[in-house]
Length: 205
View (cartoon, rainbow, N blue to C red):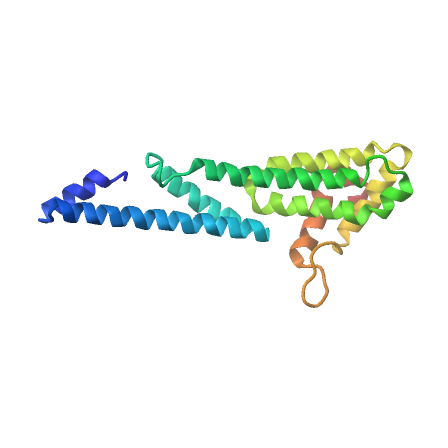
């Protein structure tokens, strides 16, 4: 452990035997490993549930531990952290790809029929952007690319974007609460997308 020598010296000054010192060190080491295992299990659980805000807090806690015990390979597992990052990035790519499929190769009528699904993908990306700050740039890049793709749809692209902005601005897309209403967070995210992306300037003016 990082402070193993100091702990050893302190216990020796207190009259502890060598075997007692080693026993305490092993116990402390085991407790730290157990705590790290619990943090990582919680991170995996939160990721599976897509609870991004709580996930971010656990990732921050994990990073602090990894930094503190970087020299102890049995405690610090940078490969595990990379796996979580890869999973989030893959999720961002998956959402963006689903959004693109709502437009790519579609005529105006087909695209409008899929508009709600397209808008939902923007909200899903918005959730990650809001609650996982380390992925903010990646999400904003994907959202911008999706909205740019709307404008690239020939004569009907700008009209589609206007209708999309109206839809998002109404706050009627997202998860539903027990009363069947869109949860406040998704309502806010939809409206924030319209307010923050220049593609919707005709909607906000």
